[in-house]
Image 1 (cartoon, rainbow, N blue to C red):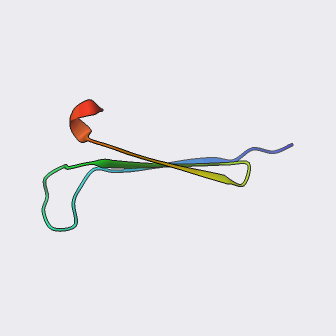
Image 2 (image 1 turned 45 degrees about the horizontal axis):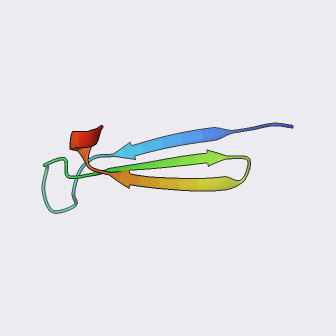
Length: 42
């Protein structure tokens, strides 16, 4: 059983260069989990 994972973190709003939130996407075993939380909590 092969497991591949990919973690993407974006911490910028499309309208500014200020970090407003983080989008973390974890891909593993054909499953996609997405988390969104404030950068201040990271």
